[in-house]
Image 1 (tube, rainbow, N blue to C red):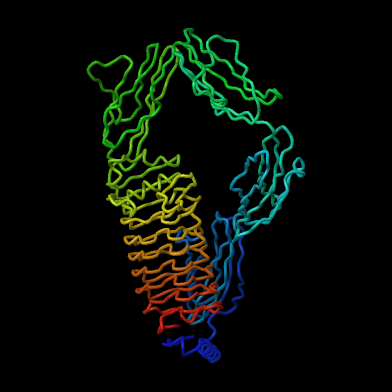
Image 2 (cartoon, rainbow, N blue to C red):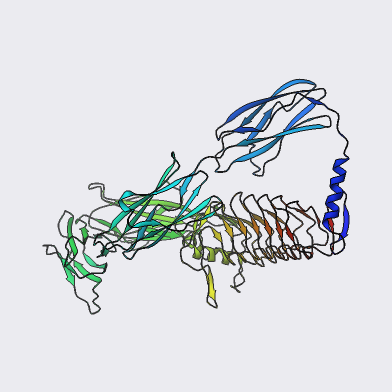
Length: 637
């Protein structure tokens, strides 16, 4: 059917006239001559594993078979062979690769001979999964609510263990897409001892267990249970938590004594450990127990090194990319040797007045893109006693690759003197509030007037954003800018310089104003089946944004999401999007083409206002659309 292109005024011409006209054209379409004979293939279904099926047909002319493109842009998971031929009878093999995702997938296979076209759908079952985001919960004596997030694509049952049915009860649960949030109420523990319960999630073959631990009536808890002391002796401090009267049982040894201080606290205790003059290590225990119930207790074990010990002042040193000399102080009462790692960038050097208990390491300049780490061992070859020093060096250059194992430590890998010169950053691992603040400074942020960072390219594909309780933006007027798990938060990456951002695969939400007023930002990569919602004003005034692909999984384009993105010329909204919010694309003056999905039901007011050159097709499923959604005059198809 050839559609007519009509210029209309929304005020004057109802859409129903247009749709009626199209229906009549369909009724009068001429029938094609039959070129494909004996084609009876229906839709094909495959299990999640690799598979192979065939279909047959006869034609009286040349033919081709094709498989529609899939949105993941990777290696095709469905192929056909052969793909073309001449008149006659033919059998085509359809092959699928294993489905390693947690979603069903499908694709259309099309047979064309002359002007005639036949097609059918190939579907493949998903990989079954039953996953818990957390399988251990600790609840205090007063009880409370435990929330378990279950991600699954199979039907399952949740069974509370027999041992805890009387004190764990299921409460209201919620469901969103394939994630279910199960809530359980834990009653107050009136027993004097801690208790343990379990909840089993199962579909018959897949099983996951949640363990719930609840504290008892009395608590005595040490901040640490083992304390290692050098042979020279030292003062140690013990931090203790308790909710009962307790007593301290000291060991029958003369080398450890309690130290009395002016600032004595019942929960901070100090002890003096005497020097160890023997050639054997020694060990003792201090017991802290409830005066009324000695079974409630915690024990501190003190282990003191023997006389022939090697102790270094620091277990780890961090060096900037420019290199330099590192001094290592060693406390030792035996001969030792320093064993250097098998790397070219660490060597021993010397200085005037070198002490036998100091070593100097020369660290070469790191001109590569990746930070590096090596270990230096100090060892007594007779007794085998050894200590290890870890040397970490940051990278230098316009492009830097960093893996952040512990959130908050990105600054350990990029020297303060170098952070404003890095132009491209590829970061993996765990990013907390301090790490994001550091990246913002590298890119030149609006709230740091003197920051002249040069960062333009940021790849966070393999990173996770974690809620570590640290601010990524100084709090303003009571507003707390703290990271949330797997979320691009409000104003998180507002910057003067960033041009390209690859979001983490683990991100599930882009919150309100996440990239608001990033005038230099021209490309954002969002990975498939990751983000569900584009928040309010998320890309507001990103005036250079020209390239963004919204993947399958997105359901909502919130209010003003792309307001003022004046460089955006085209955008395809994936299947699954149901709502386009008020003023979502307001003022996108270069936007000339928008593909709307069949899933769309609501287009709110002024959604495309100011898009004066826009050509658009309205899906049949749209139920609600304001008369002010579009410019006064626009092309509809």
